[in-house]
Length: 135
Length: 291
Image 1 (cartoon, rainbow over the protein chains, first blue to last red):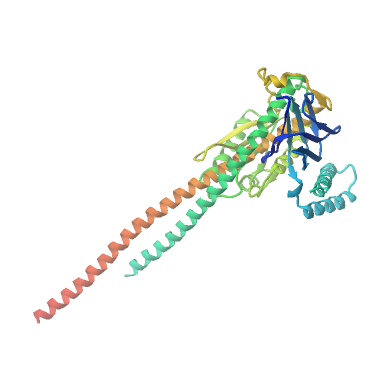
Image 2 (cartoon, rainbow over the protein chains, first blue to last red; image 1 turned 135 degrees about the horizontal axis):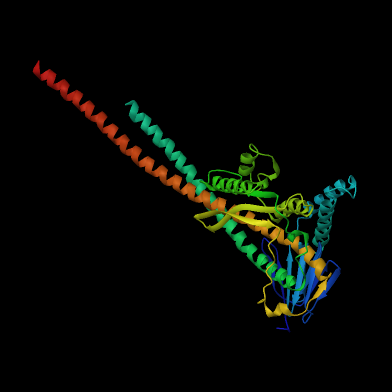
């Protein structure tokens, strides 16, 4: 068990990824962290950002939404609301979403009820664009 | 002869109806399949989520969280979930009736009930009778997890601010393609999280928590609400298509029956017309022979 690392990326819509990997980098809420095999048990919140893992020497990138990550011996389970692989991201749409959110935010104050929602949308768009550029 | 033509026209009309109901049946069948797949795909997420939540609940005292706060239930909110469209048998009516029954029962206990509608049929029905706190219509055509998040973002803050004391969801429980059952679940206060003592021994080991376990639980509980709402949405959507499939299948069968009986009627009418014509000819020749 301990000499391999299995990664599962689960979203409400589908199992985005499941398989053996060598290394995972997770956008934790307290900062990015890497997981190699034999990592100590860990439970961490996941923020909007970039998730990547190495499989047979090749890196794959995902743009993920909030959720959490659980590390037990030999297994990493990532539960997030959405996970998009870098080559499946619609860059144009992400750019439009970013501009849209920026325009809305510029007219708002921090006290607005929707401020946090729009800010999250902006962060998601930025993460998507960032990840899309890696493919 | 006019009767014969009328029957013919009617048969053509019923045949056209049959074509439509059969097409709707097939569309519903494929949508049902998609909805069932979504339900299945959601299961791993829900199961893993519950595992982590209950293993976390083992360690942290969750009872004090505002989402689990039990108050004297004076004001109650009920979410009624129905489909957006009709033509699915008694599906929507059953859900609306279940909501009304539930509301009446709670009113009898002297509690104030407010409604939230999800789905156009629920909104259209209830907004004529009462004021809706909030409604979502035309959402089932294409929905994803965001809808569950949006609904949760509406109901969570209001519960924490004690604008109401209990929240119930009337939704459709997807038992089987042919069996749809309205069900009521209590969403708030959240049911105590099962402190499953037989959790996987792997999960018994000490975790490192990032951030602390309390904050983590605070983040996970709203997600728990998303999971519950999304599940209800998925089941309702699958149920709608199942109900439509069955309703349209019955309609197609009824059309066939009607065509059959109309054809029989038409043949009889044609037969009668031929007989009448023959009688005329025979009567004519007989009259000629006599003269």
